[in-house]
Length: 257
Image (cartoon, rainbow, N blue to C red; front, top):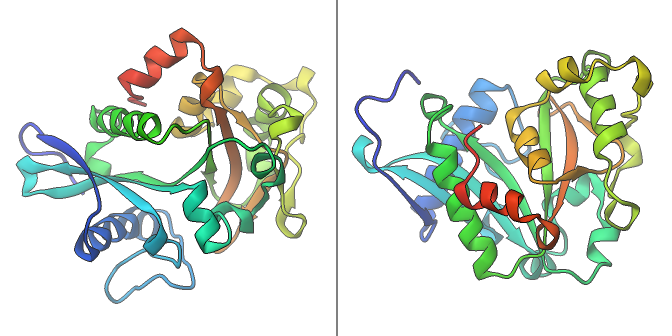
């Protein structure tokens, strides 16, 4: 998409109209379909919209650059437990058994479809989006955050080091441990812990996953290999009520990368 021309002027809002949602879906198409090679049953290639049946039931947090003609440059799709009950499931239940989370009685929020326009990566855009997300979580008294995050590609052996690192060092406690569905289950303990170069393995972990880990996040058991989206997915879980003061300060400032 090139570079940002001039200094961005950001504002964040929740999608309020169908046009807002289409703008979010258009950014998702540019990132997930054009850039990363994903696809899906309801993706509209003619209109260049990445969409699915959950969009109508979710909140769409949108980062807008007013200096670029109100361009939508970042999005987050948010699905609260009450909204999921109306639909009948969370989005990630197709990939993960969420029974431990749903049985916890806690106030849940599923995070998904997070993306930034390439021209805005590495700057303050994610920081601004995360500040708004933190406010949303406070407003709705969310206790548990979770969602699927992806490695690019479907070759588990190429991802053996980072997947093993996540399994050995960041596996969720049993009470919150989701598990990948058997049909696409991929073991993550592919390498023994004593053979891992932890630093090298962490370099292969995408920035968004690292950000959640820094906040005290965990991963569920097993990865989900998604050939339609050309990704290997892990389920990230975070107990917002157990974040330390230092982690809360990171969270309040937002995550820049």
